[in-house]
Length: 291
Image 1 (cartoon, rainbow, N blue to C red):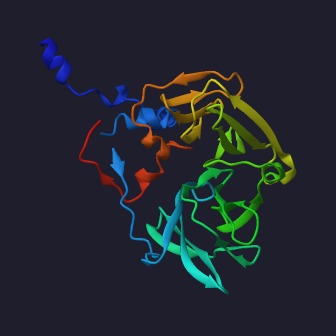
Image 2: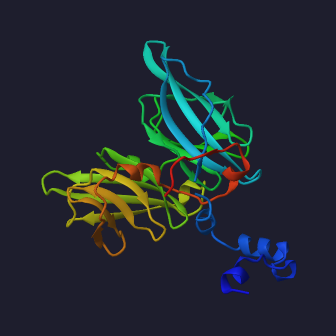
């Protein structure tokens, strides 16, 4: 028998690994490793319900629903309203659930009060501790963090640190982030005279406890003016955009490393990514492109 004939013969059943052993091996592999053996899939979302042309779509966020091993998308829109003689924006929200492939409207109240805002802070919602978060520019009170619990689908209010209101901050860059497992509020203040920047970082050491906000101010004297903040890395570095392009800045060591990425806009879609195979169990459409 030739070598080619020998290699073409199927293996005997006894030579194959038992299915339970194969399953145990596969469950130990990372998602990225498993996906190497699948050419890619994407999900086409159904049309949202809140599509009135008078509404402003402002905040969206993707969240993992741990209780049901499912994914949800929160979409918040705002409708112009006249309250007395004041122009206000009333919030409405809807949630898309992957397992049902459908949108449904949810109650948009905080402490039994309808959510109104004074202007439109377009942003993504940060997923942390089982909830989506975004900063709300309130019309009737101080700004605060609006959180949406993906388990009970209720909105809650988290107060921003008091020192943020006590000091005169002027900045176009204010963002939520997760720094080493804790919710953080980051403000970049530019010093026009010295062409430098100061980064103020508040970290909530105990989630939901306002008194646990701790502040750290980081001078960025050797850094060009910051134009955009994108995300925090797992080791606490800040990914920012300045005159030199996209850089990573370490607030502990003050080290700055330029990243070899020409177009930084795609970084808007990378925060808090989570590897998962949940989509493979849903209604999927195979991509016609291969990596």
